[in-house]
Amino acid sequence: MPSATIKLFLVQGDPKRLRTAEPSNWTGKAVAGPRSEFDSVVDREESLGSGVYLLTGTDTDTGRPAIYIGEAEIIRDRIKAHLTKDFWNQVVYFVSKDETLTKAHIRFLEGRLIELARIADRAVVTNSQSSGARLPESDRADMEIYLEKVNQLLPVLGVGHFVRAAAQKGSGPKVHTLFCEIKGLQARGQLSPDGLVVLKGSQAVLEERASTKKYPWPHNLRERLKQEGALRTESDHLAFVRDTEFSSPSAAAAVIHGGHANGLIAWKDKQGRTLKEIESA
Image (cartoon, rainbow, N blue to C red):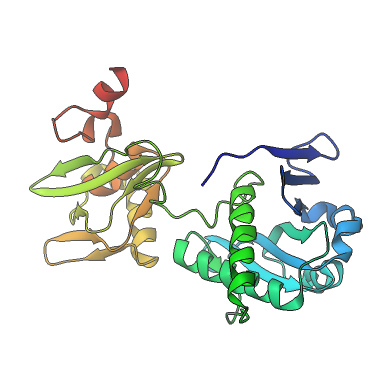
């Protein structure tokens, strides 16, 4: 993704309240805000335009992040209809400043965003069905460029649901693989902007340490990963069935070791240097 200059305007001066964002040399614009300031978000002139919108919050059944993705020819009217849903607490919508987004365009964008959110698997996508629209080749190319800008703005606005856990692999600075080994099992991981990603196919111990009875968070985290389908029980170990991101190297190591672990020591590169040694070099 190319570098970009983004104009971020905090309407009340608070980064958690109403804000707008737009990269330089782009015809689109984003508006975001909390549900607690719903009127301020939808009373803006931009909400009278057509575009796509995202409602984010927490899934009440699983406790995981949740997202709903929609499209509308009049953003304001459609978002108001979602006040009956109680899972969401933030809204972001994207419009075009030159009013060039047609119904087919926004349906295409909605479908692609739903697809990308499900691929990233960082949140429960509450849409009951996929959307989308067929577009001429030139229009699809234009919308993919628009979508690239949307994905560039979303993390800036606090929506990281579309960032794949190992998205940095193969791009930008060289990403080094780290290893965490215990009892003949091996896990592979890579540092990420949000912590550490344990790569698909990595292994973790089946038996947990006795310390988890007194300090149960590693056990709870392992159970949650099993319920979400990220960890699967094999004959004598656990296996990661997809790339899984953790908030820290220690959190990842604790799941792999079956109890508390110091990630700065547990993770090593192929030369045997610990993460602590690597960061101190």
